[in-house]
Image (tube, rainbow, N blue to C red; front, side, top):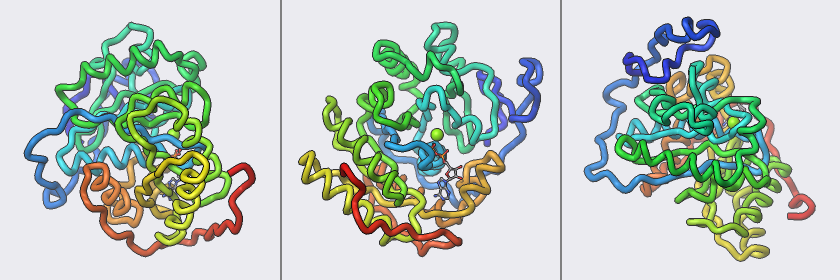
Length: 314
Ligand SMILES: Nc1ncnc2c1ncn2[C@@H]1O[C@H](COP(=O)(O)OP(=O)(O)O)[C@@H](O)[C@H]1O
Ligand SMILES: [Mg+2]
């Protein structure tokens, strides 16, 4: 992580809560070995928005967004994460920093977006949000639109905006996703999760979108299990919604994810060679329109969930 102080004065969590304490410098984070860095893209494509969402909460969106941003940054892509899971924001928590200002200050017109964005590991930029703020959780369409427009202030410095979007089929959950050029719906292999993923796809398909949502299966015990889940969701989406949901692969269930969450560090920093990390690298390739890499065999004592039937209503 670069040791330059960011504008937002983001400090490590646990450094105290007062503004003076927050102004303290952050501890340096592990740096990426130079041989892992890839050559930056020759020509910078137009800035894209990728929204990561889900039907059900707790499926791994924040972990995927944060680590995907780092994987992309390691390919030379300049990424801005927008913590759009308003009201339940926790990208900053996952990075172990306590920002002084956040998206609420931008929405209330008290801060410029540039004052709020901070620099995270591998040079990723993060627009943090506040947790537990009800008025933010219920951001109306007008304010969402204003917020999305104000993101253009960052156009010069970013190639890709990754939105950690709220889960659920509520209106504010879908309004941010509508602006995206790519939508990634995350599910786990649990029937309740992929049933809710289908419900989310269904709600989204009734809105004006720029793309057909894609599916990512997180916490899969194997590539086969994830493919099976994806096949079910794709089949139902084709049959009842007549849309071709693209399967964007999986992230294997991996205990290094939970261990990294405990340490408040992204697993791409703490366990860069873990099975979950290689899946994220593969996902990053897909986001960049490259061929994904094959999935490594699953590790860890995770129970395989093999639903026999599609849940009711799907
Ligand atoms: N691939 C994975 N393998 C194992 N555990 C995971 C994986 N992805 C997520 N988790 C677990 O799920 C929890 C919730 O993840 P999080 O990213 O906060 O979900 P969301 O943002 O969708 O609510 C994490 O704290 C982590 O323990
Ligand atoms: Mg989250």
